Length: 490
Ligand code: ADP
Ligand code: MG
Image 1 (cartoon, helix red, strand yellow):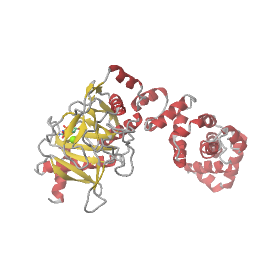
Image 2: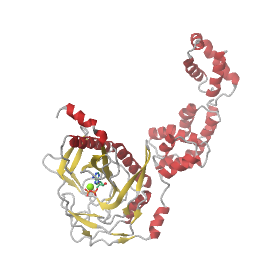
Image 3: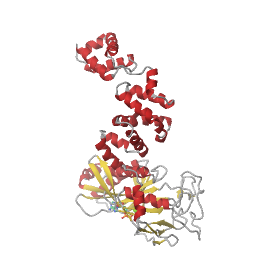
Image 4: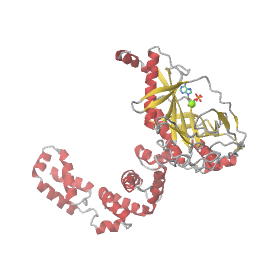
């Protein structure tokens, strides 16, 4: 197949529509496993969180962790699912070396959360991604293939860890939307505190199902499933690769076979790991050791009442309450600790835009540099409010406020006003003083002044910079520009 024919087939890409359905496994942040009290913490020495229940010893009795049920319901409510009242766990029988019982406990025909949707803000506007289900299941252990050339090692610490599997309908049509969807789901699970969303540690894993069909064709094409994608970037790349590969196959008369594939991050391609066998017969049956669990309306309502405001709700409230740009709002709704901090600030100041700018700029930078979290910043809120006032009233220059005063106040708690006065940082509002600095600057740069007068208006920036230097940042920029323009045009 020459390159020429490859490009010819790709010219027809526009005839096709991609269809994507995603399955996301999210490890719940419970302290203990789904059916026993082994710890779920990541990074422990191999095979140390392995009680007889985890190891599947005969005669042991599992018991359901109610926290996991609560977390699954939280996610379901946040995704507008309906919550099933009657639930049970089933055994899904299959043999796998890191599944010691010989079956996985899962919710087969009875997912705890049914339907629902996740709303995305795409560049083409809002899009609703329909969910099929969110169900609870236990994770398997881990087979380790890269530590010995001859043996596979097994770590069962992860076996029995609670997962929710969030399954979409086949309703996503681009790699870009898949990327946004997974980003949104990761944000939501973190927001709710039900999963840490850490893809590198495998707390969030995604399988992408991809097919293509001619635009307008209502039937679904044969799908391939790319397994265990462990970064959002790789999800996008794998889907992009698959869409192209499948269209190319169609255009060149090849047959698409239902396959399970894996992503190779070294060259951004996928490769087949197995052709789909006939439907597996897992012999599902309700686990006789676990009692079915029924949820009352009151219990579900109490979880609903305890949900935090969700990013999309905050976004629409903030849009109508504060005059903030869409960018600012998106930024502030990215992380719950940050949005909580913003909410607390807005209860103590009306300089909303200033609060947003400070958070997105200097505060983030400060927390990053000092490896602190928002929780450690609440005590400083009165100082921050004072700083906003100083800047907004023109008494303190923004960059002096952030680079000098803010840092000093954080190192050594003290009143920003007092510090600014002591350090002689309060900005000059006095016309005479600013004029004096301007006169000095203009006298020092006669050629630049002449050039400006001949039309090089861009030089205003240079004069501003010089005045700023000379005044040590104390010349009010608005007044300085105004005075400079007056002087230079005379
Ligand atoms: P399986 O039994 O193979 O896991 P499911 O019907 O449970 O398949 O679907 C798994 C995922 O695959 C879902 O997210 C679903 O939306 C998606 N899916 C199903 N059929 C297709 C298809 N033809 N093209 C793309 N995605 C699909
Ligand atoms: Mg699947």
